[in-house]
Length: 130
Image: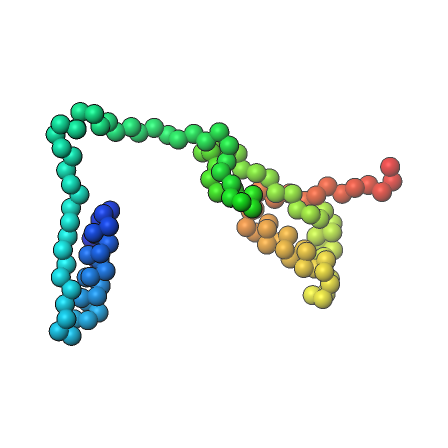
């Protein structure tokens, strides 16, 4: 059963009443469906109202209290994720037993690689002989 989509709060009440009517159609109690439409703008106010359509530009991304990015500017470049281990450590970790912590770190990195394929890069190996 397709329900009509309306933007007014009265429209949501009519949806609820229609659902209740469909659920309780065998019982005697019925909920009348009353649909209210949006009020038309008065003609004397109409000249002062204009519709503005333009793209919103954000100077910086919007973040929540924990620093997670919620909304970014449309022109923002995708970030690059640097994994906490090198590729050699990753391959070594995948060959270890499940009880080893390096295995779980490698599995977590594998998950990130699957989720963010082209955005992930391995940490560069540090040379011990300097």
